[in-house]
Image (spheres, one colour):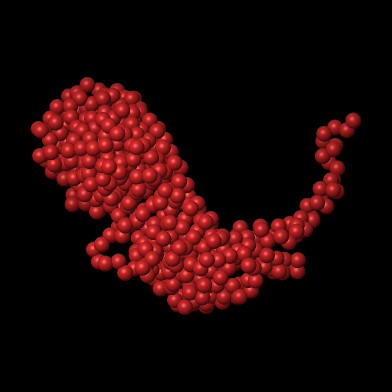
Length: 555
């Protein structure tokens, strides 16, 4: 029997022969056409120069993908070549069916007529996926003929097109609809709602900055959802100044992602409150609560700058993993005044709460939260006394005591320190970011959080407009904190002023944090560089410092 080495030493003639064979070129034309359809049309056409075998293969592609971002030069002749290329391919296209037409124009050297010719040529085909992104403000009309809408599966428009909607338009196969910066031409047809009414298989709807023509100034467009359209929706994004109307019979059995920005949710009479909603809380019903109550699979919720008329808010979606609630630029800041927020989200991982402080929080389950960001605003007059304000803030903080990363704004620390408080133990907390308000001092909260965070590794302290002297002895006089001695690896100080008390605090961390790897100090640009140099010399003179890196950042 031959040994292994002798077998390897023999040349494998069959293998050499296989390696020299062009196996790709031997594939059937139809298969080669499908392969080329996965790449931009520019590259598909370029394969025609490989050999005579490839000369006409590109004509079998089922995708037309034109992207001027692939142009390597901004020279005018290169863009002229792109225009001729698109015109030539569209003229050569003899197919009656195209799987996808995609046009991406980032350059502004296009005339309205040129874009219009390309789009109308694509509309004449039976297209399954139609995607157009144009950076320039191009005034083109996109018609929606019957032969075009019946075959559409994906329609994505990110451009300033005007869309002319005929009466009784139907999209029987449409699953993805994106409208960004589009103008819907009404013509008495209630165009946008007519489009939505014709979508019976829609799974993903995204509407961003889309306008309706001929709408009176100051009047918000009322967008309406039908029961048939909502039954298959998985992703719903509305980022526009619309009023959303949800009939009582509508449910979202498949909805997983809901993003609402700038939306006004239309209220509903009590007599029309759906039976699926909790009858015991009929007085608390509003459209937002209604949507949440009929979305059992909801995984991600973003409410930004929306107006639902205030009232108690109930969040108890068992599948929700991400939650963001923000006032935004347009949302009323008093919607949470005198209301209760109930949170029972057993799978929630990310929690971003940036709104007015509620009157009361009922937190039944937020035990899975890993990252929490709290930024509240409040009116002292909404609370019985300062202790009541403190207790409300503490309710919210206690609810997220199992998180790994926590960020608190200046208003949070102001509310917390308005009365007597006792923090819970943050057993899982690794990263802490605290901003101190004008009336809050380091010693008011820092030591409490350090003592309650036994696993803390990263600490960020931000001063927000505090110009008073800090008594740095509050740490030196306290007992050594366990997490500082054994866990703390990173310290970030923002808005550092160079005051004596601040320097004492830095010295405390440098002397006692045995695992400290890096300290970053953001000092105010108004301070003279010589001030920081003196502080740096004092810091570096600490004889038992374990810190490996100290960096300054001027702000």
